[in-house]
Image 1 (cartoon, helix red, strand yellow):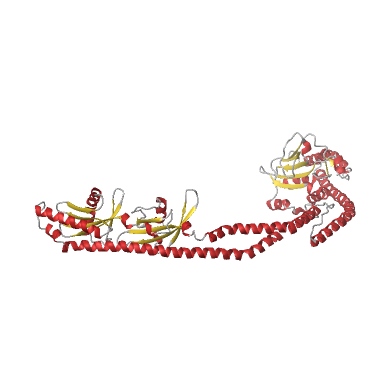
Image 2: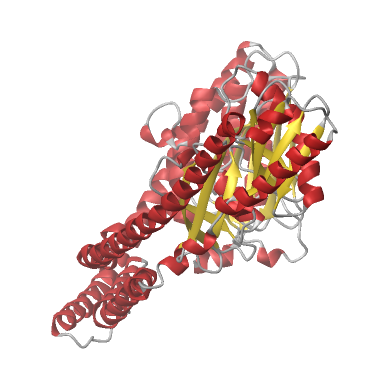
Length: 598
């Protein structure tokens, strides 16, 4: 039954069309609420981020102005250029500069260190609020690159990123004169203010990264989260981004990513906010969107169970009863269902099967008489066909004056026609049919001496099985007529018979032949084989289209098998790989007693 046309399918489609708009409305409301929360949270946190970045940038700009003013307003730095290196006045001036730097660090809350570098004497003065040796080493390592950058005309950021052993910093260097350089150092961790972002939760946080995505500041984010954010740096021009991370447990964690690039250096301020914590105020809508598929499935299953008891089960019972009737089981009677409409249909069905059962008895008896008459007519039709061919052979031998061959042929022909006296029977034994074929082939060998040979390969114990008379002879005759053309080597016909289990299985030998119910008989030759067009027509059963044409023998056999055995018999036609044609017959393996009972 076509499922698309069934009531079950139409009901499911109708119910789905009714529920779908409701589910879509709920789904849209949930998505809209989530989008509103994202917009509000991103706006709030983006304002915090922009304010924090603005404060950092303002301090860095003020530090720039401070450094540029040192060479013009600080007399101690100006005097160092004229004082002798290492003199008492030189040392006193350096100490005053050191004190000034330590005082100024307190005014610039982000600045970690101020330094003054003497390029001529490779002398570095450093004032820092942190570890002196670490900052001294970092500044010394970065000074060559800083001085090269000042001499380069290429436009570069205001502040450069330098890397320490386990930390990173921003450094700004200005040239005072040909000898002295002044600069400031800012710890990257001082620029990161994660405590401002109240929606970050346990799995969120802030971080500063360079343009390649490398972390520059400390952060509560894991390395995987930082790498995830680095992969989406190209979308920082958007107000926010929703990005996903697959955890080690296989769960998908979504984040709201905010970011701003720095105008003072090649770095970016990044904030990740977990959506699970951000949307914790929407549990109802989140539960609804999770339960929508389950709710739809429960409603659909409940409706199907109800209709199954009310409609589908009685309909299935009625359909099964009709199928049994279509297979010929006319004793089917159905129990009436509870609904009045289906009870009327079931009562009509039971009444119809009862009437058909009585009518079929009369029809079957008439059909038996008709099929019996048709079978006898078909069986007698083949005899004149062979008689004509036999007379042609005798005529040919007599015209060649081969009297001995005519005598031998007359003997075989007498035995052949003696068999025809028994051909009016419904069935004959297989060994009688093969003896008849043997006489026919001996007659043909006399006609074509040294050019024709044959072999009979029949499994032992199969001779008592029966088949309609003159079933094999038309195929042997056709093999000689059509396969013997343009022959230079001997033409060989092989006839074999064995038991098999199915209508198309190959030969299989088993000890218990009671399980093999199909008799397989094949007629093969080494001739030219079937032409492809003819083979295709024969395999499709096209020989039945012209019962009076050149394939009358094949049509006669096929039709007699159809009348007698219906679908229990089968004909196959094929070309052999080694050359030649093969015709295979499958018919029930029955003895005379079994055939009479059937």
